[in-house]
Image (cartoon, rainbow, N blue to C red):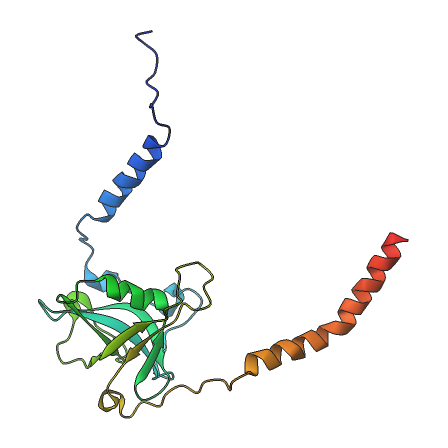
Length: 199
């Protein structure tokens, strides 16, 4: 059968080659001008809006500064929850831990807006993290409840920024109980309806 179409011997090979091609394409040099990488207006932000008035000044960008040229790159956002603790996601701190420690320095920028990449302003203030910590129970699952990480900062670098107020211990449990109590009449009625349906 000289004219028969070629069938791959391993049916998993074609998708893997396709993914490899996409991976190589993703590694291609980015020629997009840096000014086009950021959204032009708040409508371009999904489920949020730009904080043009800096209303939430305790929210900042977890950035890495490249040692070779001083450029900063935001990798995640987070919130200052005390004078020295910046709360972010564990997948962000875990990602930082995967970078070469001699090539990048972790920090936080509260600048609004933040110039980054080739637009980095060497005068922008970056609070250098003294420690980057990922919750030891973080496991990279999609709905991981311990996807938590913190950056430890020097209090001198956060002077003038009011930390966010955290909920009191047990508040979420109280809200759950209150919600369950408010659902009781509806659940009772649903039970009645289902009982009638079985008769």
